[in-house]
Image (cartoon, rainbow, N blue to C red; front, side, top):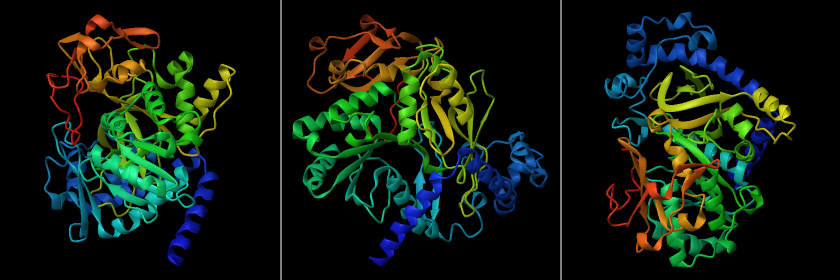
Length: 472
């Protein structure tokens, strides 16, 4: 009990210190760590040394983050995990102290993994508890965390009650109904498609969401504000009023960390404000057309991850590259390609954009911000991005109630979208709306082909252990 009390005080002190920080100050500290870690990692990892030698890069000549960003060198699954043996990727002694292995999703066809040492595993619960306290106040509220993420993704904690159910909606709902009366709040972690089936199944379980103070942490996929609004309507959460519950998101990459980027109350409020203004959408998010997706707006910790973008377009979006700054990370990864398109968003840009329109500025987080709009391959030749289609399905809530959320757009016939209906719902019983984004029609009702749950040709049932492919 005494140890828990001490850690509670430590969390309070750490969060108070963070409140006094600025994005610019944190980034400068991270840049100093970057150069040190990069030089020491070359000596520790045979794989990294070989890659740098092949690229004729002298790490000792890198003296600043500007020097670092000029390097032609990049790491990816193909030239690291697919090429080198495990002992060549790791720091000396890492394999002897190994505690856990987490695989990537394998969605790209290439598998990679993140390693955790025993020492790291001991410190992980404290880091998770600090993050949960910062958003959900778990030190003051007895909390049940129901983890519905697949593939052994876990959130070890010394504070919250944990229920590990993976992708079993029946178990999740049974536990929520049974244990929520004994807790002040429930946090559910899941991905968007599994969340949809969980909400649908809750109707049969007669779960009274009004009586449960609940929050969501959604991972695995990007989502738009229409989806957040829809989920809020089902759970009786007002996304603009955190007192009713929080619907937030976290982005992880198996090789880099489970909490690489994350939404905060400030980023959610800011994203929703930008989404409601076409000028801000163009200026800050590069959304020049309704065919563009609404990017996720995340905060990140620049003391743990150095973020940069390469080959940027006119809107500032480029290939996301991530460097790990932890001294003891088992597999040193630098300028690692995640496959995402991203843009680093500066505080000054946000302030200038709002001031130019005479709009009140939402409270900004005291951590750096990054916009993630998904993967380049998710955009069709017509310019339409899968993310825009995904969110448009939730414009009409009556229609959204009747679908699973799974759909497929074929690259060779981009004028047609296939949508899967929920079990026991016939296409003849559904009035199909146009799919609209920002008042522009993406697909007319005649371009939407509805399939019964059993006849959906792109997977009769969803395998929630894997990421779903929306584009053939």
